[in-house]
Image 1 (cartoon, rainbow, N blue to C red):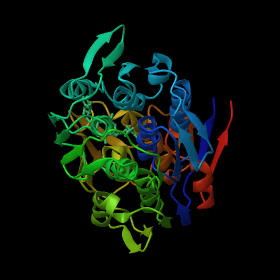
Image 2: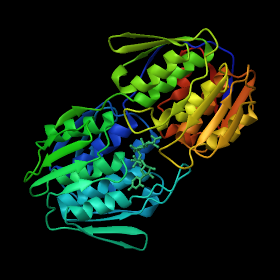
Image 3: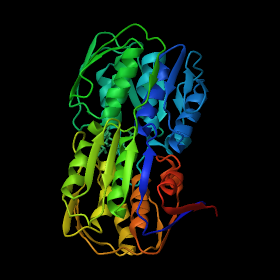
Length: 416
Ligand code: EPZ
């Protein structure tokens, strides 16, 4: 299996263009299930998770051409089953459930099972589908759902769920009557998906707020649209500038999508400049410790929690980082401690006491964002860091070592 080797201590400088957002591209590609005809989607990132969703959609009879610009046609659907072997490698596969029931009248999708960061149940997806009139049974580890035609309903999500909101918003576009989603997730990826669906002829308002209203239509038509830049990748690079005392212009990201991070970076003493489509971060002095609490958007994103912890590990002072979204998202802590970080976990919080320097070490990736945090730690550490199980990082970052090398990092991928 590949490893990534980093010799730390270099200041990162220059410009980096952000790729399309993984968590927008996945639901946008799945939305093609709702339509008979060729859709064109631009700015699709080249990631392992995108390869996985393409495989799953191909298995359903969806035709897909192209890579960064994708043409995709679900006119000839041949099946409505998403198997365990695919779904267990990527939980977001559950997103096909709603669209398949809406388009085909039935779906059989494996329950995703848990992952490193938590149990991650899909009970809210299932309950909401039942609220739309689907008959849903759980059998042999699969969700089996049937509905001659979904019926609009008012749905209240107990917990704000990103893919739950996306799954049901897609399903509701073809339901009979009006659906109101309450306590809906407000992420930019949901707004992007809603814009794509509206381009297909769906009638949706309120995306980006916690109440989304969808008036069902008889059918949808193909659309040409683009996927937004990846705010989590953008945030990762801004943190890299802050941690290495460098100066990086991140191109293509929308500053509005990372306001919570920008506020924290400024509190920590990182200079941030916004100019048009670029966000510039300049480190230079040791960061000040800041407290962080992850929350649904527009709160501080859980997907940047591990990465800002890497920065707090070498900041001046004590930082309390509280993870409120997932129950087990501190897997990176033990690996960072092997690099000399001083972190104590107390329940949902990690108490991070900044140390002057981290030291390179062999470390293991456990999940996507933990891998990113260990790469950041390696860039700032003294000595060499070897990261194993890099397939985790390849799920969500396009050519991260190439982009970091171009900014002056001493980083390379070695096979074996
Ligand atoms: C999405 O996951 C993202 N994935 C995650 O990004 C992200 O961390 C997460 O949202 C939170 O922002 C994609 O968009 C593909 P949730 P999702 O449903 O939708 C609980 C990454 O690194 N919950 O918003 O699966 C759940 O356990 C990934 O790119 C239920 O209890 O997350 C969690 O505690 C990691 N029942 C909370 O809600 C349900 O039916 C939020 O989860 C659904 C969720």
